Image (cartoon, rainbow, N blue to C red; front, side, top):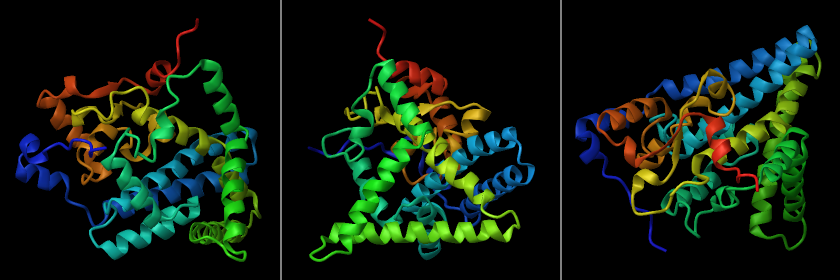
Length: 313
């Protein structure tokens, strides 16, 4: 199938303004990475130190959001938007944001750029994330329960581990060997985090806050973010303004399911060379230029969840 239609940014913004929007800062991307880790460390340490149920609840809710934030910043690195120096961009994207989350930046880059080329078409590797929608409320709730009880985490990591073990056996396929390396890096990163946890003097408790969030709230936030980006849209048609959904996010949504401006997903698909911190500006310019009627915009994530659930019979 043909590539999806692309927007002409210079016709929309003008050459000079688009150059400003696509300028990659030497410090903003790195500052966001530092922010994500600082919030995670503070919340994990606070939960372990205070030891109260409410401290743990707050930590697990918010750490999951920052873990999604690390995944989003790895995605920025895949687009070369974390730092203007490619070596720095790739190193930070791989080792500081990707590996701790169990992802390989370089493999993700290939996979994700295919998604941009064939958004919502049969060749799109992310099509399975939006194709099941709309779905029934019961089906959606089953997914939520699986996410929050760690079942999704165990299923996915178990599948990765099984592939990894095949990768180190006789006659291993190249794909399995690659997955094995990714899994080994992920496990090594967990041991580093565990060692740092013990270095705080609080034993394994700070790491436990990270791990619980990774197995529960992160999984749910990742699912909601994936649903909001493309499910139940006209994505894939000839108008590039329809290739994704932008969802306005309140402060709680920005702390959980929409970190680092990932909610401006229509803008990202229109102009994937715009760093995440410039996406709100791109959105404002599009609205001011009268393009809102062409875009799929939701007033919040609750509205999106209502849209992707079939009406009761």
